[in-house]
Each structure stands twice: as structure tokens, then as C-alpha cells.
Length: 217
Image (cartoon, rainbow, N blue to C red; front, side, top):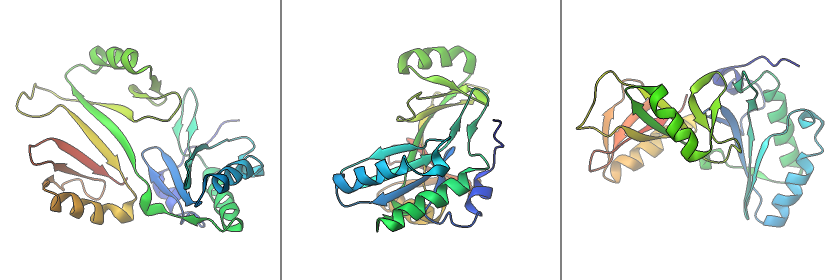
């Protein structure tokens, strides 16, 4: 069945998605469980939710929390679809029945960005090295087929930049945590390179000039 893609804003503005934040291409929620056993029970109960029967989420089980990620991955699509708000509501409702607390402020997703003069020339190397696949809808970019490790995004440049780093980290955080996280990074010795693109993203640098982007979509 074909799925219709929706935007991060459409997901965020859907009722009942307050526990969730869109980081990169997927919607994520983290629930504090307090123990591995409680997290395992929650993960097992997720498998019985009718709303997830035809669309299994990514589930990360840890000793004290469970993170659930909703993302559709097909040969032609990578992102959120129209059924994800209902799936998110069902997951949150289940968490409440188990007295689990959502922790949206604890969510973070990382992406590595490589600046390249010729993207087709460099992506085969990174794909072979990482064992990654091309991303549907953006085949010049690479994703972990297991959806565990950071995605690699390739950004074109029109001239060499020998005095500036050409590989940086993108840190996706909840939109309502951006101000706190940026202030903390600046207080820890960082500098603001530009906020021209805010609130989509900010460019920061460490004390030696290595750059990182803070993105919220």
C-alpha cells in the first residue's frame, strides 16, 4: 500500500504527539522505564499494538529507558507518513498504562556531513567503508541499513576550502531544547558561527574552529 509522506511540522501539529520530537527524518519518543525488565515488558507490549501491525517501529531498549522511532523506509521513501501520528498516540497511550514517563528533552540524533567537490566521486568510498545504503529520495546520501548509526549527508561545495574543516557533525535535538543546548555549548567554550538559518539550524564551532550544526527542523 502506498504511503503519503508528511512534513515534520504536520506531525508536530497533530494532536497527541506531545511526547514525540522529529529528529532528522523520523519521529522519536523516549520513555523512562527505571529497569531493563520494565523496558522489556514495554517493548513486548508494543508488538501487540494493532496500530503497529503493518509498520513496526525502531525500538532501542536500554537498562533504564526505551526509545521508539517511527520512520518509513522503502525504495522510494524515507521519512514520516500519514499514519505516524496515530501510531505515536497509540505508543504514548500504552506507555501511560504502564506508568512510563516520556523524556523528550533527552532525545538527540547525530548526522555526519561531508563537504565534497564531486559527491558522486566520494560517496562510493564512504558506502563501501561503512556498509551503508543509499537513502531513498536522496540517493547521494547514505544511511545505516540497520538504522542504528549516524547517517552521512554529502553537501556540495564549489571550490576547495583548505582553511576550513570539510567534515562536521549535525546534531538534531528537540526544537524546544535548542536554546538550552546552544547556550551550554557556548558556555563550554564554543562560538556561534552563524544563526542565519535559525530556527532551522545554527552553526557553532569549538575553540579550535571545528564546526557543528544544531538542527531542529
